[in-house]
Image (cartoon, rainbow, N blue to C red):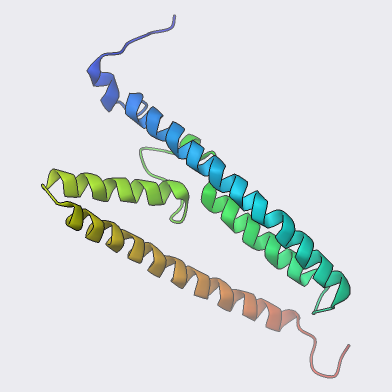
Amino acid sequence: MIEASSSPSDDNEPRGRWPFIRDVLVLQLKLLMGNLHNFVLIPATMGAAALDLVFKSGRHGARFYRVLDWGRRAEEAINLYGALDRRDGELKRDFTVDTVVSRLEDVIIRVYENGGTAANLKAAVDQVLDRLHEKSDQASERTHQAAQQGLDKVKPPDGEA
């Protein structure tokens, strides 16, 4: 039997009306971002592949695979199906569209509940974005260091072909 209830208390349920509306709107944003991602990735991978065919730089396809890795990380950050991954109201990763939207929502609600002004809200949102940038810069630096260490390990000693 299907239950059709529209009482106001349903809006506060974890899968109530407003979380559903939010999920629909966030999905639309993610679909747009995914389309932009594909729009950029198609010529970028083709250009990188062409450069790899014409100009050798290290292993075959190095530029192509680097662009492909960037594309994968961007797709993981978009996390198109993230609304299905939520468990107990927490998101699985730190750097996804869902996480950024969730953090911004929390800040907006907190500032509003404390009677904040638009200037307070802007400052609070700027703080959240600055913290995200700091975390992403640290993660990017660690990734770069790990990649460099990996390249150093597979690089042939001087004088060998």
